[in-house]
Amino acid sequence: MVYERIRNLREDMDMTQQQIADKLFINRRTYSSYEIGVRSIPTEILSSIADIFSTSTDYLIGRTDVKQPYPKSKNKSV
Image (cartoon, rainbow, N blue to C red; front, side):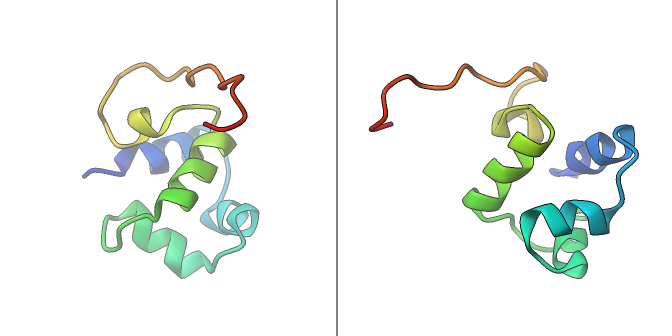
């Protein structure tokens, strides 16, 4: 499952799907469909989820096993 890490991180933080959905300003059912892979996660939402869990989008989608987020760009145009 591509987004299994999202569920694992949420559970590690003892947060409910509703709590995460509220932070993202989306419906809980929509968030749930992201966790189980029924629905693709829009880039903006994926980025927000990475911010909530203090990780990178690459970690969330399984492209890396490094949980630490990348350093923020100092260039405002990036």
